[in-house]
Image 1 (cartoon, rainbow, N blue to C red):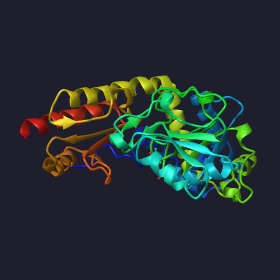
Image 2: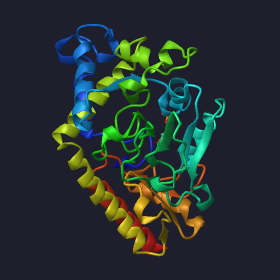
Image 3: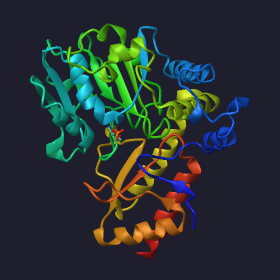
Image 4: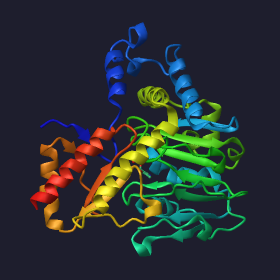
Length: 358
Ligand SMILES: *Cc1c(COP(=O)(O)O)cnc(C)c1O
């Protein structure tokens, strides 16, 4: 059976329309006689591609003028090091730990001194994200880091933090563009593209321009946000094809009604799946109602021994990528923007059938 619906956490499903457009343009982009992959990133053909991608991203997020957009490489994890390099400025920083990714971010920052924990939900197995009002940070911190959506544990924050005076740095890799956010609540937002934006190899970073002046002198130019910003993300060759595909995804979101429309359908999709899980004792999700991720639904079956059967049966039904992360096992359905409602319905139909047969 071929793949009907891809529930992988990342690299992940892309809108079919976007893939078809890439296919049509692959060999000859708008009569340029070239593929986008073959173009000089500094050429006249490529310039509108990156410019429009940035403009449309600004439009979607309603970005204020004092925010810069950078198209970087190295994935979200590279920012674990770049954030302190660019922002710590020999001071302290506080990290909120709400799941695997934010813990990894904290661990990766350990070579720097002054890295503290503001709050952690590790002792409750990340079933609830530490509430903003419990975050213990210092007034003199150079920033507070947290992760808006924990892709492995399926734990998401839904309110923008209302903290003034200390820049908030946020890993939005797996939830960016799934709903409107108030960008002015954040100093820095970053996201690996391969969840909700486009192909792997591109990292988007949005930074308030007054935060560009604090990089450690030893920061290499490719890692220095200010240098990258001054060079329009082209201090070296950017992920040119990735930026092109991301631009098509932004067009697709705008044509689909923007982030309000994304939020509406994402609520509908995730509610449908959680409501079904909650209606049985067969499937289990232990995440607090307030933090249940709309993008990554982590769940398991009451009896572990059924997991392998569940997964092989799912693939026979064209439902792929449902295996939970190797660290926590179980199952996970990633239902990003590009996953149609019908995909979630097909998954729930299969889950019902599997339950009835076991
Ligand atoms: C996928 C993911 C990452 C890792 O991204 P890479 O691009 O592989 O470095 C980091 N944080 C979150 C929240 C993620 O979902």
